[in-house]
Length: 266
Image (cartoon, rainbow, N blue to C red):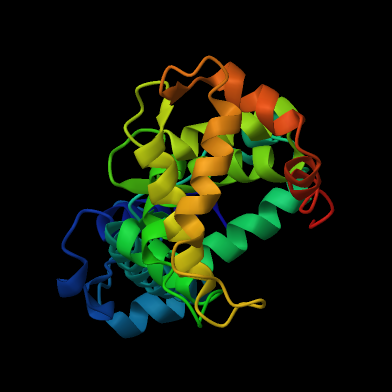
């Protein structure tokens, strides 16, 4: 292609991008001015016969420009749906105990369930309910959602989800117990009182449903709380601190075994 042909191509391409693309028709493409070596006949036939390659190139350029515009519109429509895009995987890899490959798998699953990039509480409850079809998981999902929602803004981003999952699956014993304490500390005042522990334990029993074996008595949640709270409230001041919670859990073999259940999930 000669320099004159290239210059014309650039000029015509620039015209396509000026915003009036829908009015642009093939016959609107014009050859260069009479002063150029391409001649003075401005008819379409002469234009094509003199510069067949350039004519074809310009037509393809116009077509591609229309295609690009359509893709742009589709992207803009998608962006109105996607509310949040996560941080770079390299940054999340540095902040969590997951590899880049594991993060990619987790993100695909998260995006599949939450195309907008964030999950609200109602969607979270619906997802969680699928795992406990014989019980009512709504209240426990509510408390769990609040623990994931570190910003307390009513939505959980992929970063929130993966940071919590990293602690629960790959964190140290102290990290797991600290996260669990935060789950039980419903009002976020730094302490667990008996009512808060009762709310969480009852939500767990409701989630498990009536078809447990052996069959649980109705007052089982309260009995459970009385035993554990008395054990954890070491100074008998009516609340359990983080230190008391961690110390009591580490003294209980059943609790320590339960913390190890998910270590090899991924």
